[in-house]
View (cartoon, rainbow, N blue to C red):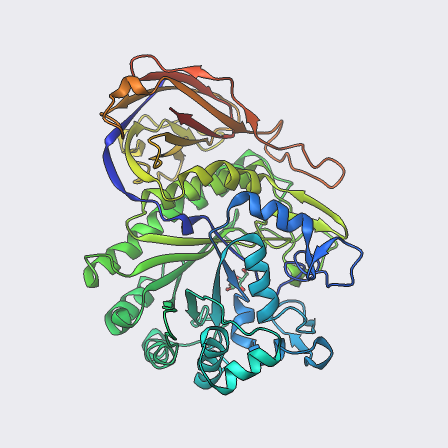
Amino acid sequence: MVKVKINTDKRKGKIDKNIYGHFSEHLGHCIYGGIWVGKDSKIPNTDGIRNDVIEALRKLQIPVLRWPGGCFADEYHWEDGIGPGENRPKMINTHWGGIVEDNSFGTHEFLRFCELIGTEPYICGNVGSGTVREMQQWVEYMTFDGVSPMTELRKRNGRSEPWKLKYFGVGNENWGCGGSMRPEYYADEFRRYSTYVRNFGDNTIFKIACGAGDFCTHWTDVMMREAARFMNGLSLHYYTIPTGSWTDKGSSTEFDETVWFDTLKNTLRMEELISKHSEVMDRYDPNKTVAMIVDEWGTWYNVEPGTNPGFLYQQNTVRDALVAGINLNIFNSHCDRVRMANIAQMVNVLQAIILTDGEKMLLTPTYHVFDMFKVHMEGELLETDYTAPEYAAPGKAAAVSASVAAEHDGSGHVLGSESIPALSISSSMDSAGKVHVTLCNLRPDSSMDISLDIVGIGNNGAGIASYCKATGSVLTGKTMNSHNTFDAPDTVKPVALKEMPIQDGKLEFKLEPMSVTVVTLE
Ligand code: AHR
C-alpha cells in the first residue's frame, strides 16, 4: 500500500495553464493535411481548417499554441505567407524533407486557427536568417492599430483590426538549426532583435529567448547573465529518446519491457533537467521573474516504416500516455519557474495528440492524457507527500535502498541506474475547492494500492469532511504498445472510475498497471 498525504492548506503556487500548451510546425503533415486542407477541400473545413481537428482541440481548452517552428521558423519569411494565395512565393522546406512549401498557411490562417480553437498564439520569429526589420514589421503588421505601411498592408489583405499577440519567441535553437551561434553571440542578438519587438497600444508582448537544449547549463548561464533583464521567458528543449541515440531512436510500437523502462527513465530526466537549469536561473533571478518555457518536449522515435524520414510521423501508444503524464506532473511540481510548456507536436508529428490520414482522424493516448490533466490548469499546486516504490529495471532485482525512494511533492525523483520511481503524482485545488490528483503507475505488470490521506482545512473552511466522494478516469491498454488506428480508433481511451466514498479524509483505490489516472475529490 502506498501512502499519499495531500495537504490542502499547503499551497505551492499557481499552475499556469500554459503548461498545457502545444506546438505546430511546418513539418510533414502537421500543418498541411493535419490542420489546413484549404477552403476547396472535400474534407469539411472552416476557412480551410479541418472541422474535426477544430472540434477535438476545442475540447482540450488549449491555452497557447507555438508556430511556425522549430527549425522552420529560422528560415521562414512571413511576408511570403500573406496576400492572395496565388501570389505567395514557394520555397523549399530544407529542414523537413526538402519539399515545396507553398505558403498557403501564413499569418492570417494561423491566427484564424487560434481564434477557432480558442487559444493564444505564440509566434516564433526568425533570427537565424531573417532581419531585425523583418521581425519588427511582423509584430507591427499583426498588432499596430495606427497609420503605417504595415497596417495598410494588413488592411489590404482583409484584416482591419489588429490581432492581440502576447507571446513572441526571438529565434529557435539558435545554438543549432537557428544559426549555430555561441551563447555570447546570441545573447547580444537577442538584445538587439528584441528591442524592436514593440508593444503597440495596449498589446504587451511577452518575449521569449531561445534557451538551452538538454543539459547545456552554460547556455542558460550566459543568457541569464547577459540578457535576463530583456526577456520574460527563456526556453528549454528536451526530447525523450528511448535509446538515447539520434541514429537509431527505436520504434514507436515495437518494443519490449527493457525499452519501456529506458523510455520512462529518460523521460524522468526532465525533473533533473529543470532542477539544474532552475538552479542557474535562481542565481541571477531569485524572484523567478523570468519564466522557464519548455517549448519543445515529448517522445522522438524512428519514423513509421515507409514514411518520409523528414516528416517525423510516429505512432503513439500507452507508453506515450505515461510519458505525457509523467512530464505534466513534473511541470506542475515546478510551477514556480515553469510557466509554459509546448508538446511537440500537435498533429501527425512526433508525440502528436491527433493523427490524420486524408479525411480520417484519430485521437492518440497522449490526447486523452491532456484531456484528463486539464483540470490542473490555473489550480493551486498542493503539497503531496509519498514514498514512491521502486520499479527495478527488467531482469534486475529491486535494490533495497532508501536512496532510490523519493519522498517529495511530485518533484525530486532520485534516479538509480537500475531502478526508477514506479509512481508519479501531482495534485491541485481548483477555484471551487475541488482537489484533482493525477497519478501514473509506471510498472507495466503490477497494480498499485494507494491510500490517500487528505489533511488540511480545505478551500472553504468547512474541514476535511467536506471531501466526501471521488470520481475520475483511468487510461491504460491491454499491452504496453496498445495504440489507436484509423480502423480501431478507440482501442486506448479513458474509462470512468466508479464513484468512491471518502471517509474521514481517507480514500483507498488501486492503480492499474501501466496507467494514467485522474481522481477528483469533492
Ligand atoms: O520538433 C522538431 C524539431 O526539433 C524542431 O523543429 C526543432 O526546434 C527541434 O530540434
